[in-house]
Length: 139
Image (cartoon, rainbow, N blue to C red; front, side, top):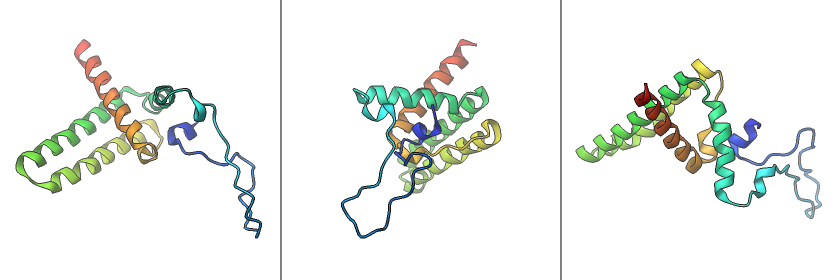
């Protein structure tokens, strides 16, 4: 699967020319569709996303760093709620992103764009956390 699925944003097919700026308004830009654009259920779309997500997080060190990032964000949210300091809650996603991206660039040698499908990304992060913690307990 390509990174385009992970980005989850339709794009023009390679080699296609950009939409014309001609005065004809009846022409619409062409968009390349992938097989999963028409999956029969949202769950199937997420499962395809999850497969690509796992490839982007193949190294166990990346998975552990993501667990640290997710738990740090959860801790900041809890601390912010307990102390009534919204700045801690607002800081949580930034800390999560910084730690996670550092692991991608330093370990995997790739870069993700979680804002493309934020709901799926959060769901995948929580699934990855659960798996990483389960693996750690099994050792």
